[in-house]
Amino acid sequence: MASILFVLLKTPHENVNLELTTDLGGQSKKAALLFEDAVYYAVDRKAAKHLAEHVDEIFVISDDLAARGFECDIGGKFKAIDYGQAVDLIMNYDRTVTL
Amino acid sequence: MSQSILILATKAPYGTEDFFAGARLSLAMLASGSISRSTVLMVGDGTLNAIASQNPGAIAMPSNPEAINDLADFEGEVYVLEEDLKARVGDLPIIDGVKKISWEKARELISDHELVTTF
Amino acid sequence: MKRTLLIHLRSGSMMNMDSNLAVKLARAALDRGHNVRIFGYGEGITVVKEGQEPKRFPNVGKELTELAERGATIVVCETCCAARGIHRGEEVKGAKVGSLTNDLSKFVSEADRIVTIAR
Image (cartoon, rainbow over all chains, first blue to last red; front, side):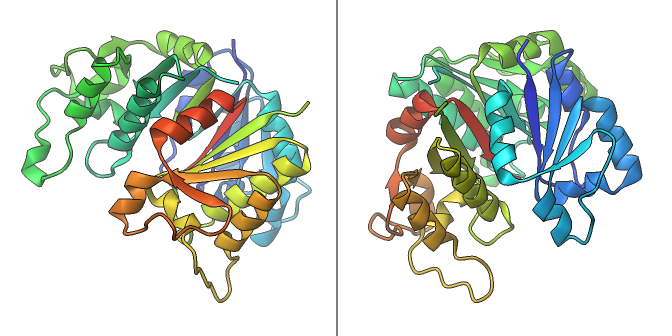
């Protein structure tokens, strides 16, 4: 099974169907890579829990988080990264799917 | 290096041009002769593009059914997630050549295509 | 290992931060030693229009030229350009108006990974 990196760009309250991560990913290794307004998943507790239920790992662009007024010291499945690390993830996962 | 691409269609018809653009991209990949497999998979609201009774002429927009039919000329595969379509509109007739599939088959398509792009 | 990243951009130059994301990802991929291809489709074609002069926001056109100077290949869809009144010869230096069939299919065949940046 191909591992999948799901790319999210929108806030948790915009129209994103997180169920697709499970429907398309099944038992595969799955991660979410959060850019732009999607970094709010890291600070919205309910949304963070919901996303964490769907994927194995969650990566947040630290610059995007800092720009919005939040610390990059986040825990749980969430890990703050830079763009170089984002490129490494894209290369390491078998598929990248934007939702 | 990739020889296959999956077009994941997630948007409803006519509110945006996304489905038409995705179908055209798929057609171009097939017509190029350099990509061996370019497949369209409709999920979520994207499944509404499979409805046979669409009449885009009513709003003078390009036809998504015609865009699907054009893919058939190049033996392009088009799939619709049956469960999502049913949840939205029940058992309506779908465009000839579009195959209804389960999530299990959809996951196989993800694995079988080297690249996935979303519309 | 040197690989090829294809960025499929469908958001416009100023409609949101997506074009800036495309630039940042491309820059990071080049920094990592990878090949970069950017294909602009739909509204994504507006990033290559010459003469962009945003007063406060990053100048995506200039940034694309810088990426091209570092080896990135940047092409946008001709049909989408014509629809928006942008023509060959109006691209920023280093970018090209091209086609799905000739250029994107080549990019797809060269790509190890694709990232779709769109809404």
